Image 1: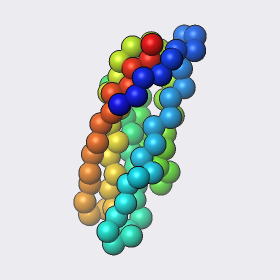
Image 2: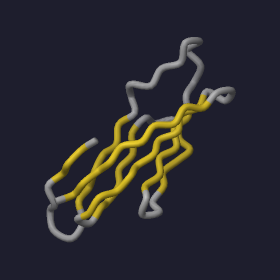
Image 3: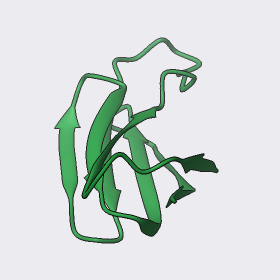
Image 4: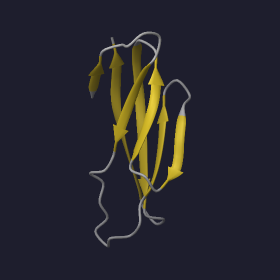
Length: 79
């Protein structure tokens, strides 16, 4: 989880899923979504950027190798 100070009306937040690995070294595809309806992907890049107004948001990242998918969430609070 992450707390980010607000910079005006909206704040750019980078979500990084580069710690994801595949035991067979298959290519991974990433999809990011936030609780306010923003989404990025599917894409080969392991990070995504979102603009958030002050508040609390849930960001979900799904990572797949085409056979298996794993999902994780983070709570982002912009103060």
